[in-house]
Image (cartoon, rainbow, N blue to C red; front, side):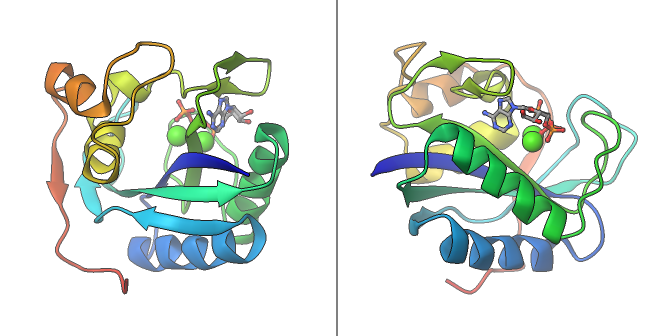
Amino acid sequence: MQEAYLLLGSNQGDRLQWLQQAICMLALLCGNLLQKSSVYETAPWGLEAQPHFLNLALLLETDKSPEALLESLQDIEEMLGRRRAELWGPRTLDIDILTYGNEVMHTEKLTIPHLFLHKRRFALAPLAEIAPNFVHPQLHKTIATLLAECSDPLSVCLYDGFLAR
Ligand code: ATP
Ligand code: CA
Ligand code: CA
């Protein structure tokens, strides 16, 4: 078993509903959900002319390899209406692997920890809520430190529509 931190995001349609459904599918198909952050509303990163996102981070305990996990995440994205279009464009659902245990890997399909984790406030803020003391296995700094040092100016706010816990 390994513990992976994931980031979920949606900026199309009923955003909260996509996140809720993704959480159900993750629990059904990928393993045990051990922790879940609040939901955050975040300004789009990379491609700014698109609706704001809702994001949340969670901790998944899984027996899947990183590659098998990625495949399952992509299946869930597809089942929940994701159509692959432009990179960083609008989507009903995006699920990224932020970290997988303490692994560091870089292949054609997977970069772990996620390449932009430390550059994105929208990923660091939810992750810091559930894992402030987790040490980034490549940068050797805690998530709380990376958030404090992050220069991403894009807004990240707690969202007040709550998910059932
Ligand atoms: P970003 O990865 O910058 O957040 P994105 O989520 O919009 O961009 P996608 O279109 O969802 O990008 O995914 C593109 C590819 O990224 C996937 O097909 C996958 O192979 C690859 N990838 C590399 N590292 C990861 C990771 N840690 N988690 C998820 N996908 C990854
Ligand atoms: Ca992403
Ligand atoms: Ca993705």
